[in-house]
Amino acid sequence: MKTPDSDKSTLSELNPRPVAVAAWHGLFWLVFANAVGVMIALLLLVPSLNQQLGEWTYGRWIMVHMNLMLYGWTSIPLVGFLFRAYGADRGAAAGWCRPVVWTWSVALGIGTLSWLSGYSSGKLFLDWTGYARALFFLALLGLWLFLCIALVQGWRKGVRVSTLALVAQLIGLLLLLSVPFLIYIASSPNLYPAVNPDTGGPTGTSQLESSLVVVFVLLLLPYGIASRKQEKRLAVTMSWIALLAEFALLATLSRGDISHRQPAQFMSLGSLLVWLPLIPAYYAAFAWHPNTRRWRLASLWWWAGLVVTGWVSFLPGVLDHLKFTDGLVGHSFIAMAGFTSSLIIFVTVQLLGEGGWIFNRTRSFYAWHVGVIAYIVVITVAGWREGYDPTFTIVPGAARNILYTLRLITGVLMLLAAADWLVDATTLLNENETLSTAMPQEKTA
Image (cartoon, rainbow, N blue to C red; front, side, top):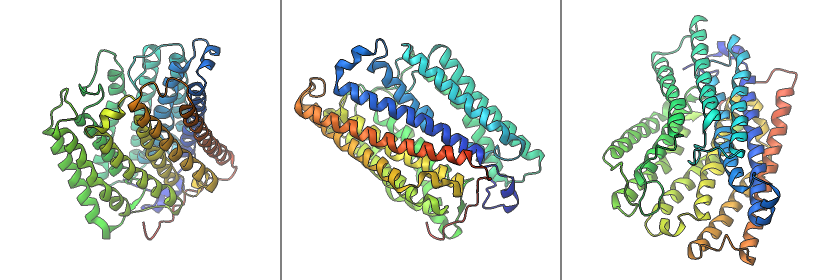
């Protein structure tokens, strides 16, 4: 697949604004969702405030918060990656990127009104129902059609890619085509995955399956946005072999309702620990823009924390104590606010090149990570205490109020960092001069 680094002739054709627009929309939803999160933290600290909100109380706002984080902040910036991968940020197609992103955001806005009005499938992160469900499906399908058009435009302009890259693009389109349909089908309240009968949550098999999808995405991301170092081919080869072995292991596991106490369940999930050294070695095999360094390292550290805590929290005894408590909220924060957010920013900075400065202010970098780490510590302590006394987080008390006050403060810190990024992203979009996409490569990863 062509990249601006591997083919200098296409560098001048790149329009960086589609990536910047996707980043801006993602940050807008991050700020909005974080503001909702701060309000939710306040409602948990002072439950009586719910009486002032009419029907728009905690139960409806929590759906808005979670879905906007997933389908807004952690999804729209990756649309910028797809623009680059399929050549949509070149030529005539670049002018249509903004409407495509706006269509996605409008679908999210309508979804927000739907959830606040009480419409939901009742499924976590799959609350799409009714007209909002249909509109979001159309928005995703529209993006897919646009990528197809952009790819054909590149062919007509004579953009040449290797056979392997072309096969990868076509396979990618097939996989992307399944996404709108899978989300639409999975949102049905009549369809449920296998359940762990001892916790009511996911089984080890389903968690391994979803984790391997994440690993697969991690292995694909560098292609199309960074050049590979030939002297480090072994790390790349070993990583893909390990992924194939993991999928072979997955094929041997039960896919029905099964307890986490079954050795095969927690031991197979432990196989993810092999990715602690493999993912850093894999990413070191590619050359990255110097602007990405702090976020690349942050995403790798958060990845290590996610893998370790994910496995430990699933072990018999630990999961039994943490199920349905704030402790699992803490783990989800490692996944979303820590790892996924750092990864999204890392990729976006690579795509923006010199324009990636918007994410590299020291104050916002540390405000975000201090807020996230402090939140995880606070909520894990609350969850562990809740495991002994389920009323701990429900009945106001001194210890509970202190922890929830600290939780509110950490939320404000993260909101300030997100607002800082949004302001800088707005400045970037409003600059009169052409955004620079020059990507000088690091000699060391």
